[in-house]
Image (cartoon, rainbow, N blue to C red; front, side, top):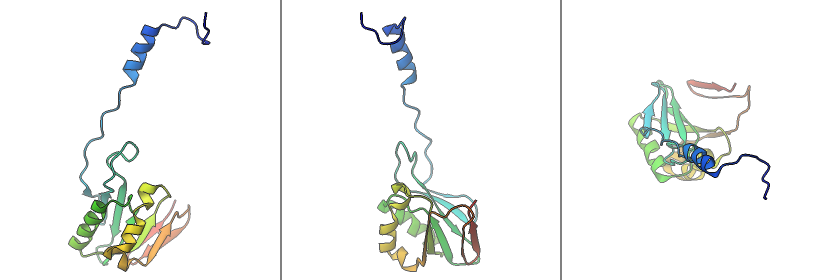
Length: 148
């Protein structure tokens, strides 16, 4: 008799258990590619849906109503559609990117940086902030960011 370290094992009950618990979760609800969170914060999805990014990486444009400059928090994975959405959003609101803030080194957050800097949008970027740690801060006119 083969011993597998467990007694009373029933193949039929194991199959029932597996069939109840191996179902894939329902797909996440669809989100708009561009969503205004507040007057000064807009989320643009990174156009990279998947099992780890769900609907796509959340990237944010932060600006102040009294200034033309804007920040981008995370650059997505480098999908051309993301750059198109970003360019359209900035043009509509008469903003220009002056800074990019990269939250961490996962490719879906930093992978789009080379394409962004090589694009016309990259011409106005003066600062790229990477991986600020607790207590550090950064500022552009009208916006001050302090990490917790």
